[in-house]
Each structure stands twice: as C-alpha cells, then as structure tokens.
Length: 54
Image 1 (cartoon, rainbow, N blue to C red):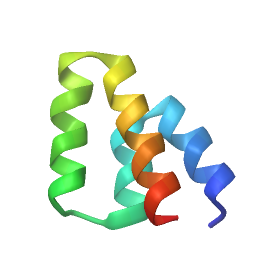
Image 2 (tube, helix red, strand yellow):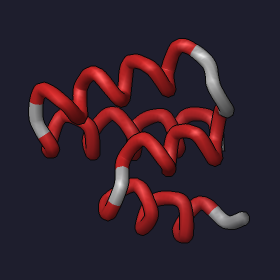
Image 3 (tube, rainbow, N blue to C red):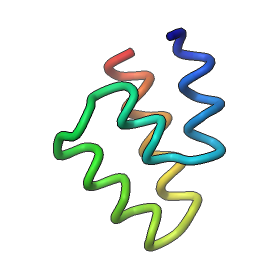
C-alpha cells in the first residue's frame, strides 16, 4: 500500500492509517488517544507516523 493511500485513509480515520503502517503498537494507541482528544491532533500524528515510517 502506498504512502499516499495511507495518508488519505489517515485523514478520514487517523487510527486506521497508523494501524496500517505500524500495527498495534504504542503509536497506534497514542493516535487513538489523540483522536479522542481532537480530530486534528490525530490527523497530524497519523501523517507524521506514516511519513516517518512509510
């Protein structure tokens, strides 16, 4: 799966984009927490994780 597709998924549902990149690890749980605290922080974190590890 390309990074562009993961980023599009991350914009729609941030935890899913992180899950597809790293699986169920600390970054995934952190993204769920950030998404619960606010949609935008979840998106920013998801795109950062995808760009860093993609």
